[in-house]
Image 1 (cartoon, rainbow over the protein chains, first blue to last red):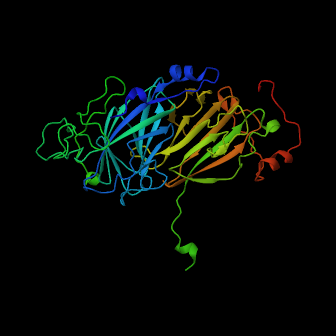
Image 2 (cartoon, rainbow over the protein chains, first blue to last red):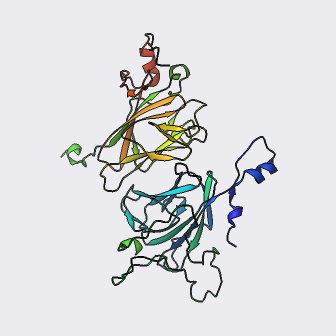
Image 3 (tube, rainbow over the protein chains, first blue to last red):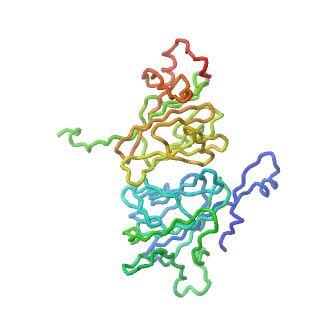
Length: 222
Length: 185
């Protein structure tokens, strides 16, 4: 069963109150990053270290090949620290926003149509398409009010998440494809992480979705 | 050929010059962990933390009124820029951070101006960025001011303390009474 957002809370300690009151009155829902991952090589060990769920504090979450990475991906072409997801608060905001920064000196990171080189960064919207070293990643942010931590819920997609634009494509608006269950999986059969078979939807209100740009996708996707 | 002639060309690194002031620094030794006048080289990918916690912070203030992590600085590169820039982020839940006249609450961040005044509590830091070419490393160098840095709308450049390499040596070398203007407290 996918984790219920209501169950993903962070206790805010209030030392004077009895414990049961603290748990009931002070918990705030965590921001959830629903992360879908895809790599074109079938059966690869790329995602062997990806947990179903990862709770992280308010420091930047590192993605890369190295042992210090919080999200470790096993790809030789990936840098030890390839990118970071940094939570912060916009002035006047009450929910965490996220900034994605490229940390690879050799590689690049494609984010919502922008190619980021070393140390360049962008603010993420409600739904984000990211590609690096052949990995495709779609990040959907569901805001919670806790500022202590956030949680990533990972889903491994057997099918591509981001498609190349064809040369004859004339429609300026690029659509994010629906995920298809793998052949023979059976209707409704969950993969081993259990959720995110519904079409990606922008979350109502909250952080505006970054407009999709028509841009030729570079080798980040292959 | 000598190793000097064979070596890769060194790039100039960006340097953050930070002048620190706190009214009680001489009495309480809050800056005793800071190595003044020492240029420390740091990788641009590092998040530099300032605060009380010696396990997590790069630079430590020995003051219980300072948060465990008070604020952080990190490097980024603006699009189409050849030099690195800095972001400052308030990591304290209790204390606001003032950058010039802008107030940052917990987890708020902003681009650090090339020259600016950072303030929290009684602390005043004058920060000046010297641009370099390197994208790999940057440096931080601290100096100590005995006088408040914020004087109405003027940031007075304070007389530098003689370079002596250590905080305690700097204190003992100057035994003359400190003059304080009547408007400086």
